[in-house]
Amino acid sequence: MNRSDDFHSLERLHCRAARVIFNFPKDLPSVEAVTRAKWDTLRTYYKNSILKLILKKYYNDSPPCMTAHIAKSQSSYNLRNSLKLEIPHFKSNIKKSSVSYRGTILGNFLPIGCRMTNSVNSFSKMINYLTLVRDISFANI
Image 1 (cartoon, rainbow, N blue to C red):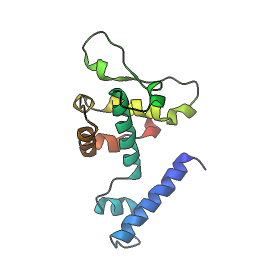
Image 2 (cartoon, rainbow, N blue to C red):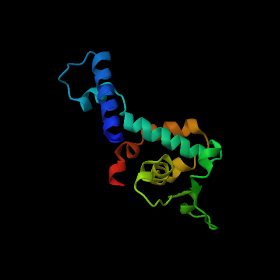
Image 3 (cartoon, rainbow, N blue to C red):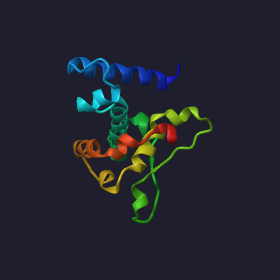
Image 4 (cartoon, one colour):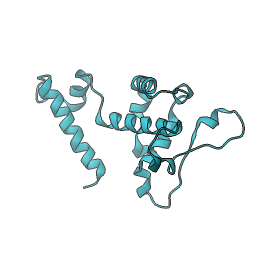
């Protein structure tokens, strides 16, 4: 059993909770139960949490242990790419499930307006309305 299996099990519990709390029929598909409850999936909450951590790192408000793992792109020009994060390179595929790798991928996918925010609260509100974050799959990256 791997991490994606664990996450899938948690997601099933999340959908079951939606059915119980909102008294939905037991045969209602999981995706529809979460949609009717107006809940996001646990994967979306996970991605949003990673993005908030990355924003804190970007503005030097993160724990010191994260500072070494996430780096801003070094550019002497004032270009759009100066707001991007450097994607870490690893020798193995195991590290591709790390927060530093996934966070930089997610952070670089965001529109420039989101990356330019200076408070975590306004950033949280922005990413909650973005369908882009919901649609990103780590399996495809």
